[in-house]
Image (cartoon, rainbow, N blue to C red; front, side, top):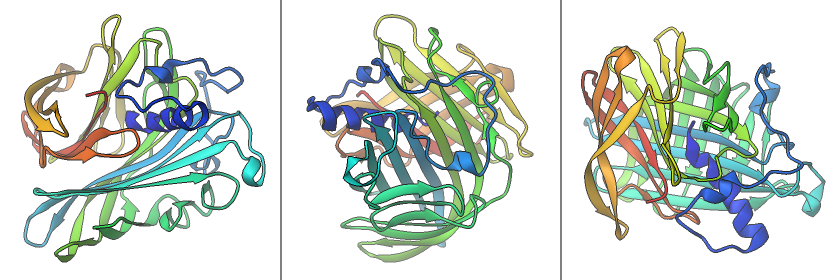
Length: 349
């Protein structure tokens, strides 16, 4: 699900209503009157669906990457663009109800570099064009003739990156043909991914440039009322195993009842199996002191139907996103029944 993209909705609440920034994300279950809601049976239309959907309140273009330098050092990279709407429409210029938020990060074993950008819609500062594909906020950009081959750039006070992406497999649709249920009450989003990117380029860090290669995972999702009223936070895992299989799994934590889980098993040729609530589980094993709080940075993730029982361990436990609405996100190593690398996102801690 790459659920941190729901941060865009929280940003809209903050900017439009003046509410205090909070570790609780329960407001994402608030009423979305007037906005469109996902429905089963939606037929995706490309390249149009690579672009924005103003009739929905929340949307994101979310890329993470596991990278390796020539000396074997492991890195993580994040590039995200969130759109949230104050009204279910688009209007020109400063009258646009669209709000945009960008996050970029680079994680090393010793450091975590973060930058954030904010923008209003309608004035050209941020946006997405479906074809030829371009997503941008200020000078940050993810763009290409299509979503198969793209250039990715971003910069912050202490870092920058310039990367090339090339897809080596098909798009993946989560849940029921892209209809991804998020609660027992039926809250849902439209959700597809491109988990087969090869990525290469240059990280510019305080000690100088580093040439890197690796694998990247892009999530695309849009919704209007994605959480149940008592769902408050989540843990999201993307896993790329050494045998070529991949796994996406998430847990949505509920303050009033059982947590809700879902998962997608992805084979090397792109064949998928969707798993419903209860099939996937994640158990926190070890906590680290991060940004003044205790956060689990070592997990056990299990999907028995596929023989998965892995330990998920942060490469850098201090991968804290000190942004407008803070959360944890960083690269992880996988060991146990399957070995590999991936990304972990956690909110509400």
